[in-house]
Length: 454
Image: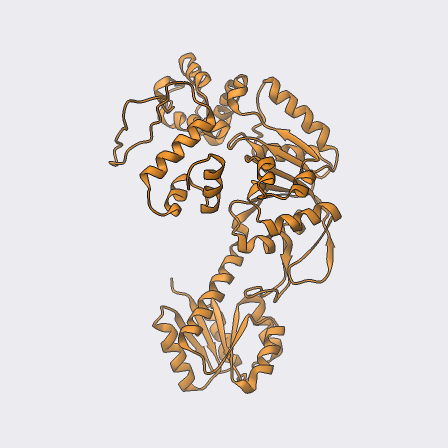
């Protein structure tokens, strides 16, 4: 659906020229000659942007502009003589102004930029979630490593110490953070989880710390950041190794002073929040290479817990499988069990994807077993450890097979897989990143960690 622009004010000739110029670029245009007509147009179809021409038409004043700016981005067009009025509109919350005569490409670029920025901030909640305790915990098992982990969590949860959770991808680091929050004195407060890989670098600061109205283009109103949203509770920073350097410095200040400042503000606010962070990366190595602040690492290292990979706690595989089978979201109300032969296969597999991979295998087995009450080996979709040649799938694309003459480590499997995908996609690295399901910046860091030529 085309973006909708409401033109307010201006003479007939100006409105016609602007409408024609923007319409040919794919925008849907409506116009209003005065404040009353603008009010009717806003009710009929809320716009993605209001284009307001100076001098203000009848019925349009500071109070109305301020009200509009709270709900929509406002772009002002003015003459040289009307710059003071345009500046006043900015102080009231308008996004930007352009001085006539304005180049049509410049106007179209400003319109596109303002609408895109406003859309990003309207969808900012996509990158965060307030985690509730409705889902059952995945801290399920009987192994000695898990028992030691739970003892550590009970000890640290009662304190206000910053916690750093280490572990491979898929081991359940977010579940560890949930358990810390659940056992803490902040359990009645929110647990706000932030995926540091998902937040665009340009939005990271304003999402984390919040911003004041007018702090930058698109900031039409004050927005509380994630630190404020987590007030009285816990802020979980997942994949903290992906945080940009400038944010690392500001996060260090929060940890040291327990205070922060919204973007565009001159006033410090108390950070009434506990920070728990997690990563699957070698932060010590990153600090030595200058990719992560050493002083921030010291602060995060106040209390470190490590979630062991599933291959090192095989005693937890059977309890986890039973847990998944009993979960109503998986079982489809059919009580199933796993045959001895199928369980042996599950116990013998290395699980490079850890609990996340086990969960996916069990979910698929439930589907493939249909109405049968027993899951057998043929219902399991476990990759083979070796294969003589690539297998061609139904779609015609070559499936991924990795052959080794020995039992490979997880690092060897990861390196071989990355090399295979690089060979299959020799073009732009963005295509490789899409296949791997990671960001391009993360890909280059992965290549450096695996010592694979970029």
